[in-house]
Image 1 (cartoon, helix red, strand yellow):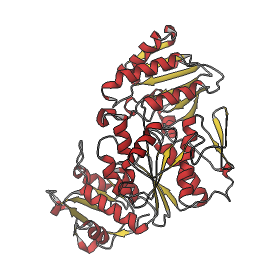
Image 2: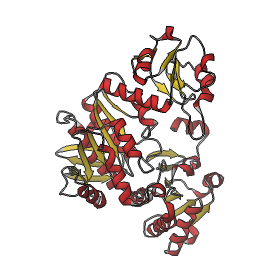
Image 3: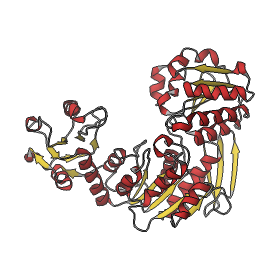
Image 4: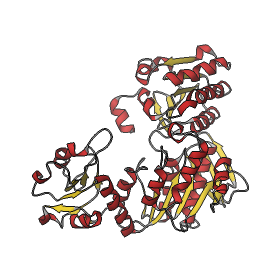
Length: 463
Protein backbone atom coordinates (compact mmCIF):
# COMPACT_ATOMS: atom_id res chain seq x y z
CA UNK A 1 0.00 0.00 0.00
CA UNK A 2 0.99 3.63 -0.29
CA UNK A 3 3.23 4.71 2.59
CA UNK A 4 3.14 8.48 2.86
CA UNK A 5 2.41 10.94 5.63
CA UNK A 6 0.28 14.04 5.20
CA UNK A 7 3.45 16.09 5.60
CA UNK A 8 4.82 14.20 2.58
CA UNK A 9 1.65 14.91 0.62
CA UNK A 10 1.78 18.62 1.39
CA UNK A 11 5.43 18.77 0.30
CA UNK A 12 4.89 16.77 -2.90
CA UNK A 13 1.84 18.76 -3.99
CA UNK A 14 2.97 22.19 -2.80
CA UNK A 15 -0.18 22.39 -0.71
CA UNK A 16 -0.82 23.98 2.67
CA UNK A 17 -1.28 21.56 5.58
CA UNK A 18 -3.93 22.50 8.11
CA UNK A 19 -4.14 20.82 11.50
CA UNK A 20 -0.40 20.30 11.29
CA UNK A 21 -0.29 18.41 14.57
CA UNK A 22 -1.53 15.45 12.47
CA UNK A 23 1.25 15.86 9.89
CA UNK A 24 2.77 12.45 10.64
CA UNK A 25 -0.49 10.60 10.08
CA UNK A 26 -0.21 8.02 7.27
CA UNK A 27 -2.58 7.49 4.39
CA UNK A 28 -3.12 4.12 2.73
CA UNK A 29 -4.50 5.34 -0.58
CA UNK A 30 -6.58 8.02 -2.24
CA UNK A 31 -10.22 8.18 -3.30
CA UNK A 32 -12.23 10.76 -5.22
CA UNK A 33 -15.54 8.98 -4.57
CA UNK A 34 -16.92 9.00 -1.04
CA UNK A 35 -19.01 5.90 -1.83
CA UNK A 36 -15.98 3.69 -2.51
CA UNK A 37 -13.63 5.25 0.01
CA UNK A 38 -12.07 2.84 2.50
CA UNK A 39 -10.95 3.70 6.03
CA UNK A 40 -7.48 5.23 6.08
CA UNK A 41 -7.69 6.74 2.60
CA UNK A 42 -7.33 10.43 1.86
CA UNK A 43 -10.39 11.93 0.19
CA UNK A 44 -9.52 14.24 -2.69
CA UNK A 45 -12.43 16.59 -3.41
CA UNK A 46 -12.44 17.13 -7.17
CA UNK A 47 -14.90 19.44 -8.91
CA UNK A 48 -16.10 17.47 -11.93
CA UNK A 49 -18.49 18.24 -14.76
CA UNK A 50 -21.52 16.86 -12.89
CA UNK A 51 -20.56 16.82 -9.21
CA UNK A 52 -18.27 18.73 -6.87
CA UNK A 53 -16.44 16.46 -4.46
CA UNK A 54 -16.47 19.20 -1.85
CA UNK A 55 -20.19 18.49 -1.43
CA UNK A 56 -19.31 14.99 -0.19
CA UNK A 57 -16.65 15.80 2.37
CA UNK A 58 -18.91 14.96 5.31
CA UNK A 59 -19.79 11.59 3.75
CA UNK A 60 -16.09 10.86 3.24
CA UNK A 61 -15.27 11.69 6.85
CA UNK A 62 -18.13 9.49 8.04
CA UNK A 63 -16.69 6.59 5.99
CA UNK A 64 -13.32 6.88 7.73
CA UNK A 65 -11.24 9.21 5.59
CA UNK A 66 -7.88 9.75 7.28
CA UNK A 67 -7.56 13.23 5.79
CA UNK A 68 -8.65 15.54 3.00
CA UNK A 69 -7.30 17.35 -0.04
CA UNK A 70 -9.46 20.36 -0.85
CA UNK A 71 -9.37 23.57 -2.83
CA UNK A 72 -7.96 26.53 -0.95
CA UNK A 73 -11.11 28.34 -2.18
CA UNK A 74 -13.39 25.96 -0.30
CA UNK A 75 -15.48 28.34 1.85
CA UNK A 76 -15.64 25.99 4.85
CA UNK A 77 -11.92 25.25 4.87
CA UNK A 78 -11.28 26.77 8.30
CA UNK A 79 -14.26 24.94 9.77
CA UNK A 80 -13.02 21.44 9.01
CA UNK A 81 -12.28 19.20 11.97
CA UNK A 82 -9.16 20.04 13.95
CA UNK A 83 -8.44 16.31 14.33
CA UNK A 84 -8.20 15.67 10.60
CA UNK A 85 -5.19 16.59 8.43
CA UNK A 86 -6.36 18.83 5.60
CA UNK A 87 -4.26 19.84 2.59
CA UNK A 88 -5.40 22.86 0.60
CA UNK A 89 -4.22 23.24 -3.01
CA UNK A 90 -5.12 25.55 -5.85
CA UNK A 91 -6.41 22.68 -8.03
CA UNK A 92 -7.28 19.32 -6.44
CA UNK A 93 -7.06 17.36 -9.71
CA UNK A 94 -3.62 18.80 -10.37
CA UNK A 95 -2.70 18.07 -6.76
CA UNK A 96 -3.75 14.43 -7.21
CA UNK A 97 -1.65 14.17 -10.38
CA UNK A 98 1.42 15.63 -8.65
CA UNK A 99 1.04 13.25 -5.74
CA UNK A 100 0.57 10.19 -7.96
CA UNK A 101 3.57 10.97 -10.17
CA UNK A 102 5.79 11.61 -7.16
CA UNK A 103 4.73 8.29 -5.62
CA UNK A 104 5.20 6.54 -8.98
CA UNK A 105 8.78 7.82 -9.15
CA UNK A 106 9.49 6.90 -5.53
CA UNK A 107 8.44 3.27 -6.13
CA UNK A 108 10.03 3.38 -9.61
CA UNK A 109 8.69 0.18 -11.20
CA UNK A 110 9.29 -0.88 -14.79
CA UNK A 111 6.37 0.88 -16.48
CA UNK A 112 4.31 -0.80 -19.21
CA UNK A 113 1.62 1.19 -20.99
CA UNK A 114 -0.91 -0.05 -23.51
CA UNK A 115 -3.70 1.47 -25.54
CA UNK A 116 -5.93 0.62 -28.50
CA UNK A 117 -9.50 0.91 -29.72
CA UNK A 118 -10.35 -2.61 -28.51
CA UNK A 119 -9.02 -5.13 -26.02
CA UNK A 120 -7.13 -2.85 -23.63
CA UNK A 121 -8.44 -4.31 -20.40
CA UNK A 122 -8.30 -7.91 -21.61
CA UNK A 123 -4.69 -7.48 -22.77
CA UNK A 124 -3.75 -5.77 -19.52
CA UNK A 125 -5.16 -8.71 -17.55
CA UNK A 126 -3.34 -11.19 -19.80
CA UNK A 127 -0.08 -9.31 -19.35
CA UNK A 128 -0.61 -9.27 -15.60
CA UNK A 129 -1.25 -13.03 -15.54
CA UNK A 130 1.98 -13.64 -17.48
CA UNK A 131 4.11 -11.24 -15.46
CA UNK A 132 2.70 -12.26 -12.09
CA UNK A 133 3.52 -15.90 -12.80
CA UNK A 134 7.19 -14.82 -12.84
CA UNK A 135 7.19 -11.85 -10.48
CA UNK A 136 4.55 -11.68 -7.70
CA UNK A 137 5.34 -7.99 -7.15
CA UNK A 138 3.75 -7.12 -10.51
CA UNK A 139 0.90 -4.59 -10.36
CA UNK A 140 -1.74 -3.51 -12.87
CA UNK A 141 -4.23 -0.66 -12.86
CA UNK A 142 -7.66 -1.69 -11.65
CA UNK A 143 -10.72 -1.98 -13.85
CA UNK A 144 -10.92 0.84 -16.37
CA UNK A 145 -8.78 3.34 -14.46
CA UNK A 146 -7.27 4.51 -17.73
CA UNK A 147 -7.97 8.25 -18.01
CA UNK A 148 -6.83 11.54 -16.46
CA UNK A 149 -8.60 10.66 -13.21
CA UNK A 150 -8.16 6.89 -13.18
CA UNK A 151 -4.42 6.72 -13.86
CA UNK A 152 -3.49 8.96 -10.88
CA UNK A 153 -5.74 6.83 -8.67
CA UNK A 154 -4.11 3.69 -10.06
CA UNK A 155 -0.64 4.93 -9.16
CA UNK A 156 -1.82 5.84 -5.66
CA UNK A 157 -3.18 2.30 -5.23
CA UNK A 158 0.11 0.67 -6.25
CA UNK A 159 1.85 -1.34 -3.48
CA UNK A 160 5.08 0.18 -2.27
CA UNK A 161 7.24 -2.79 -3.35
CA UNK A 162 5.99 -3.02 -6.94
CA UNK A 163 8.70 -3.86 -9.51
CA UNK A 164 6.58 -3.98 -12.70
CA UNK A 165 3.46 -1.89 -13.33
CA UNK A 166 1.06 -2.43 -16.24
CA UNK A 167 -1.12 0.58 -17.03
CA UNK A 168 -4.06 0.86 -19.42
CA UNK A 169 -4.40 4.17 -21.28
CA UNK A 170 -7.68 5.25 -22.89
CA UNK A 171 -8.74 8.37 -24.75
CA UNK A 172 -11.90 9.78 -26.28
CA UNK A 173 -10.92 13.33 -27.27
CA UNK A 174 -8.08 15.07 -29.11
CA UNK A 175 -5.09 15.91 -26.93
CA UNK A 176 -5.90 13.44 -24.14
CA UNK A 177 -3.07 11.02 -24.87
CA UNK A 178 -0.54 13.84 -24.79
CA UNK A 179 -1.80 14.57 -21.27
CA UNK A 180 -1.80 10.89 -20.22
CA UNK A 181 1.69 10.17 -21.54
CA UNK A 182 3.53 12.15 -18.80
CA UNK A 183 1.40 10.42 -16.15
CA UNK A 184 2.52 6.95 -17.22
CA UNK A 185 5.86 7.53 -19.01
CA UNK A 186 5.93 3.92 -20.22
CA UNK A 187 9.34 2.43 -20.89
CA UNK A 188 7.55 -0.34 -22.80
CA UNK A 189 4.34 0.36 -24.71
CA UNK A 190 1.89 -1.19 -27.15
CA UNK A 191 -0.85 0.04 -29.45
CA UNK A 192 -3.20 -2.90 -29.94
CA UNK A 193 -5.29 -1.69 -32.88
CA UNK A 194 -7.07 1.26 -34.44
CA UNK A 195 -10.84 1.15 -34.90
CA UNK A 196 -13.78 3.53 -35.25
CA UNK A 197 -14.23 4.32 -31.55
CA UNK A 198 -14.96 7.87 -30.33
CA UNK A 199 -15.14 9.15 -33.92
CA UNK A 200 -17.61 11.76 -32.71
CA UNK A 201 -14.70 13.62 -31.10
CA UNK A 202 -11.62 12.27 -32.89
CA UNK A 203 -12.94 12.60 -36.43
CA UNK A 204 -11.09 9.92 -38.41
CA UNK A 205 -9.18 6.68 -38.05
CA UNK A 206 -5.98 8.48 -38.98
CA UNK A 207 -6.53 10.95 -36.14
CA UNK A 208 -7.17 8.06 -33.74
CA UNK A 209 -3.91 6.40 -34.79
CA UNK A 210 -1.90 9.59 -34.33
CA UNK A 211 -3.48 10.20 -30.93
CA UNK A 212 -2.81 6.64 -29.74
CA UNK A 213 0.82 6.80 -30.82
CA UNK A 214 1.31 9.78 -28.51
CA UNK A 215 1.49 7.31 -25.59
CA UNK A 216 5.30 7.34 -25.84
CA UNK A 217 5.65 11.11 -26.31
CA UNK A 218 6.88 11.68 -22.73
CA UNK A 219 9.14 8.61 -22.53
CA UNK A 220 12.87 8.35 -23.03
CA UNK A 221 13.99 5.55 -25.37
CA UNK A 222 10.70 3.63 -25.16
CA UNK A 223 10.20 0.16 -26.61
CA UNK A 224 7.10 0.37 -28.81
CA UNK A 225 5.07 -2.66 -29.97
CA UNK A 226 2.43 -2.40 -32.70
CA UNK A 227 -0.11 -4.76 -34.22
CA UNK A 228 1.43 -5.98 -37.48
CA UNK A 229 -2.04 -6.87 -38.83
CA UNK A 230 -3.30 -3.28 -38.55
CA UNK A 231 -2.21 -1.69 -41.83
CA UNK A 232 -3.35 1.81 -40.89
CA UNK A 233 -1.49 1.76 -37.59
CA UNK A 234 1.72 0.57 -39.23
CA UNK A 235 1.42 3.19 -41.96
CA UNK A 236 0.90 6.10 -39.57
CA UNK A 237 3.75 4.92 -37.31
CA UNK A 238 6.06 4.58 -40.30
CA UNK A 239 5.09 8.03 -41.61
CA UNK A 240 5.80 9.38 -38.12
CA UNK A 241 9.28 7.81 -38.27
CA UNK A 242 8.76 5.85 -35.07
CA UNK A 243 10.90 2.88 -34.15
CA UNK A 244 8.82 -0.16 -33.29
CA UNK A 245 8.53 -3.93 -33.24
CA UNK A 246 5.42 -5.90 -34.11
CA UNK A 247 3.18 -8.68 -32.86
CA UNK A 248 0.41 -10.32 -34.85
CA UNK A 249 -0.77 -13.22 -36.97
CA UNK A 250 1.33 -12.11 -39.91
CA UNK A 251 4.41 -14.31 -40.37
CA UNK A 252 6.38 -11.08 -40.82
CA UNK A 253 5.65 -9.96 -37.24
CA UNK A 254 8.43 -10.06 -34.66
CA UNK A 255 6.20 -12.12 -32.37
CA UNK A 256 3.69 -14.43 -34.04
CA UNK A 257 2.05 -17.71 -32.97
CA UNK A 258 3.59 -21.07 -33.81
CA UNK A 259 0.20 -22.73 -33.61
CA UNK A 260 -3.44 -21.90 -32.75
CA UNK A 261 -5.94 -24.63 -31.83
CA UNK A 262 -9.54 -23.79 -30.89
CA UNK A 263 -11.91 -26.21 -29.18
CA UNK A 264 -15.27 -25.14 -27.85
CA UNK A 265 -14.92 -21.81 -26.08
CA UNK A 266 -11.19 -22.24 -25.51
CA UNK A 267 -8.03 -21.66 -27.53
CA UNK A 268 -4.54 -23.10 -27.16
CA UNK A 269 -1.82 -20.83 -28.50
CA UNK A 270 1.86 -21.70 -28.87
CA UNK A 271 4.34 -18.81 -28.94
CA UNK A 272 8.06 -19.49 -29.34
CA UNK A 273 7.51 -23.05 -28.16
CA UNK A 274 5.55 -22.02 -25.04
CA UNK A 275 1.92 -23.16 -24.72
CA UNK A 276 -0.89 -20.98 -23.36
CA UNK A 277 -4.52 -21.98 -22.71
CA UNK A 278 -7.09 -19.22 -23.15
CA UNK A 279 -10.69 -19.65 -21.92
CA UNK A 280 -11.86 -17.65 -24.94
CA UNK A 281 -11.88 -17.77 -28.72
CA UNK A 282 -11.30 -15.43 -31.63
CA UNK A 283 -8.33 -14.06 -33.53
CA UNK A 284 -8.60 -10.83 -31.58
CA UNK A 285 -7.96 -12.72 -28.34
CA UNK A 286 -4.88 -14.37 -29.85
CA UNK A 287 -3.57 -10.92 -30.80
CA UNK A 288 -4.25 -9.72 -27.26
CA UNK A 289 -2.13 -12.59 -25.93
CA UNK A 290 0.64 -11.84 -28.41
CA UNK A 291 0.69 -8.21 -27.29
CA UNK A 292 0.79 -9.26 -23.64
CA UNK A 293 3.64 -11.68 -24.36
CA UNK A 294 5.60 -8.98 -26.19
CA UNK A 295 5.19 -6.47 -23.35
CA UNK A 296 6.08 -8.87 -20.55
CA UNK A 297 9.11 -10.44 -22.20
CA UNK A 298 10.37 -6.98 -23.21
CA UNK A 299 10.29 -6.09 -19.51
CA UNK A 300 12.89 -8.79 -18.91
CA UNK A 301 10.46 -11.28 -17.37
CA UNK A 302 11.40 -14.66 -18.82
CA UNK A 303 8.72 -17.35 -19.04
CA UNK A 304 11.25 -20.06 -19.81
CA UNK A 305 11.10 -21.64 -16.35
CA UNK A 306 7.30 -21.36 -16.04
CA UNK A 307 4.74 -24.04 -16.90
CA UNK A 308 2.97 -21.61 -19.18
CA UNK A 309 0.12 -23.97 -19.99
CA UNK A 310 -0.92 -23.71 -16.33
CA UNK A 311 -1.14 -19.90 -16.28
CA UNK A 312 -4.74 -18.96 -15.50
CA UNK A 313 -6.35 -16.35 -17.75
CA UNK A 314 -9.80 -15.07 -16.93
CA UNK A 315 -12.28 -12.78 -18.61
CA UNK A 316 -13.18 -9.59 -16.77
CA UNK A 317 -16.69 -8.43 -15.99
CA UNK A 318 -18.79 -7.65 -19.09
CA UNK A 319 -15.84 -8.38 -21.40
CA UNK A 320 -16.61 -11.79 -22.85
CA UNK A 321 -17.45 -13.46 -19.55
CA UNK A 322 -19.73 -16.50 -19.74
CA UNK A 323 -22.66 -16.86 -17.35
CA UNK A 324 -24.85 -19.98 -17.16
CA UNK A 325 -28.50 -19.29 -16.31
CA UNK A 326 -31.39 -21.78 -16.45
CA UNK A 327 -29.72 -24.03 -19.01
CA UNK A 328 -28.66 -21.09 -21.20
CA UNK A 329 -25.19 -19.66 -21.71
CA UNK A 330 -24.76 -15.89 -21.86
CA UNK A 331 -21.61 -14.47 -23.42
CA UNK A 332 -21.58 -11.00 -21.84
CA UNK A 333 -19.44 -8.69 -23.97
CA UNK A 334 -21.24 -5.40 -23.44
CA UNK A 335 -18.78 -3.27 -21.51
CA UNK A 336 -18.36 -1.27 -24.69
CA UNK A 337 -18.74 -1.55 -28.45
CA UNK A 338 -17.53 -0.04 -31.67
CA UNK A 339 -17.79 -1.36 -35.25
CA UNK A 340 -14.51 -3.30 -35.09
CA UNK A 341 -15.23 -5.02 -31.77
CA UNK A 342 -18.86 -5.68 -32.76
CA UNK A 343 -17.78 -7.27 -36.03
CA UNK A 344 -15.09 -9.39 -34.38
CA UNK A 345 -17.35 -10.46 -31.53
CA UNK A 346 -20.28 -11.46 -33.74
CA UNK A 347 -18.06 -13.37 -36.15
CA UNK A 348 -16.39 -15.28 -33.34
CA UNK A 349 -19.78 -16.02 -31.76
CA UNK A 350 -21.23 -17.31 -35.03
CA UNK A 351 -18.27 -19.65 -35.50
CA UNK A 352 -18.34 -21.04 -31.95
CA UNK A 353 -19.90 -24.47 -31.34
CA UNK A 354 -23.27 -24.58 -29.57
CA UNK A 355 -25.83 -27.24 -28.69
CA UNK A 356 -28.82 -24.94 -29.15
CA UNK A 357 -29.69 -21.74 -30.94
CA UNK A 358 -27.34 -18.80 -31.34
CA UNK A 359 -29.10 -15.64 -30.16
CA UNK A 360 -27.44 -12.25 -30.69
CA UNK A 361 -28.65 -9.34 -28.56
CA UNK A 362 -27.08 -6.19 -29.96
CA UNK A 363 -27.62 -2.50 -29.31
CA UNK A 364 -26.46 0.98 -30.10
CA UNK A 365 -22.77 1.71 -30.66
CA UNK A 366 -22.29 5.23 -29.36
CA UNK A 367 -19.94 8.15 -30.12
CA UNK A 368 -19.56 7.33 -33.82
CA UNK A 369 -20.38 10.79 -35.14
CA UNK A 370 -22.03 11.34 -38.52
CA UNK A 371 -21.16 7.83 -39.74
CA UNK A 372 -23.13 6.10 -36.99
CA UNK A 373 -26.00 4.97 -39.24
CA UNK A 374 -23.59 3.61 -41.85
CA UNK A 375 -21.66 1.59 -39.27
CA UNK A 376 -24.87 0.09 -37.86
CA UNK A 377 -26.08 -0.83 -41.36
CA UNK A 378 -22.80 -2.61 -42.00
CA UNK A 379 -23.33 -4.69 -38.84
CA UNK A 380 -26.81 -5.61 -40.10
CA UNK A 381 -25.33 -6.78 -43.39
CA UNK A 382 -22.74 -8.81 -41.50
CA UNK A 383 -25.35 -10.52 -39.32
CA UNK A 384 -27.34 -11.60 -42.37
CA UNK A 385 -24.36 -13.63 -43.55
CA UNK A 386 -23.55 -15.29 -40.22
CA UNK A 387 -24.80 -18.51 -38.63
CA UNK A 388 -27.07 -16.77 -36.11
CA UNK A 389 -30.61 -17.99 -35.41
CA UNK A 390 -32.23 -15.07 -33.59
CA UNK A 391 -31.38 -11.37 -33.46
CA UNK A 392 -32.70 -9.04 -30.75
CA UNK A 393 -31.87 -5.36 -31.19
CA UNK A 394 -32.07 -2.58 -28.61
CA UNK A 395 -32.15 1.16 -29.26
CA UNK A 396 -32.77 3.43 -32.23
CA UNK A 397 -29.44 2.62 -33.87
CA UNK A 398 -30.01 -1.02 -33.03
CA UNK A 399 -33.16 -0.77 -35.10
CA UNK A 400 -30.97 0.24 -38.04
CA UNK A 401 -29.06 -3.02 -37.59
CA UNK A 402 -32.36 -4.91 -37.74
CA UNK A 403 -33.53 -3.02 -40.83
CA UNK A 404 -30.36 -3.82 -42.74
CA UNK A 405 -30.24 -7.45 -41.59
CA UNK A 406 -33.81 -7.89 -42.80
CA UNK A 407 -33.05 -6.15 -46.11
CA UNK A 408 -30.03 -8.42 -46.53
CA UNK A 409 -32.09 -11.58 -46.20
CA UNK A 410 -32.21 -12.40 -42.48
CA UNK A 411 -35.52 -14.07 -41.52
CA UNK A 412 -38.02 -11.38 -40.50
CA UNK A 413 -39.72 -13.59 -37.91
CA UNK A 414 -36.38 -14.12 -36.13
CA UNK A 415 -35.74 -10.41 -35.50
CA UNK A 416 -37.10 -8.66 -32.40
CA UNK A 417 -36.86 -4.93 -31.71
CA UNK A 418 -36.89 -3.04 -28.41
CA UNK A 419 -36.43 0.63 -27.65
CA UNK A 420 -34.37 0.03 -24.50
CA UNK A 421 -32.90 -2.66 -22.27
CA UNK A 422 -35.61 -2.01 -19.69
CA UNK A 423 -38.28 -2.69 -22.32
CA UNK A 424 -36.53 -5.93 -23.29
CA UNK A 425 -36.40 -7.01 -19.64
CA UNK A 426 -40.10 -7.82 -19.63
CA UNK A 427 -39.88 -10.12 -22.64
CA UNK A 428 -36.48 -11.74 -22.47
CA UNK A 429 -37.63 -14.94 -20.75
CA UNK A 430 -40.26 -15.54 -23.43
CA UNK A 431 -37.77 -15.04 -26.26
CA UNK A 432 -35.13 -17.48 -25.03
CA UNK A 433 -35.07 -21.26 -24.78
CA UNK A 434 -33.06 -23.81 -22.83
CA UNK A 435 -29.71 -24.60 -24.51
CA UNK A 436 -29.58 -21.18 -26.17
CA UNK A 437 -26.20 -19.46 -26.34
CA UNK A 438 -26.78 -15.72 -26.11
CA UNK A 439 -24.26 -13.05 -27.12
CA UNK A 440 -24.72 -9.53 -25.73
CA UNK A 441 -22.92 -6.60 -27.37
CA UNK A 442 -23.54 -2.84 -27.21
CA UNK A 443 -22.02 0.32 -25.85
CA UNK A 444 -21.95 0.56 -22.06
CA UNK A 445 -24.67 3.20 -21.97
CA UNK A 446 -27.23 0.73 -23.32
CA UNK A 447 -27.00 -1.45 -20.18
CA UNK A 448 -27.53 -4.79 -21.93
CA UNK A 449 -26.24 -6.77 -18.95
CA UNK A 450 -29.46 -5.95 -17.09
CA UNK A 451 -31.50 -8.21 -19.38
CA UNK A 452 -29.87 -11.42 -18.15
CA UNK A 453 -32.75 -13.21 -16.37
CA UNK A 454 -31.15 -13.64 -12.94
CA UNK A 455 -32.17 -12.32 -9.55
CA UNK A 456 -30.66 -9.15 -8.13
CA UNK A 457 -28.74 -11.19 -5.56
CA UNK A 458 -27.29 -13.43 -8.26
CA UNK A 459 -26.48 -10.35 -10.35
CA UNK A 460 -24.50 -8.85 -7.47
CA UNK A 461 -22.61 -12.10 -7.04
CA UNK A 462 -21.76 -12.16 -10.75
CA UNK A 463 -20.57 -8.56 -10.68
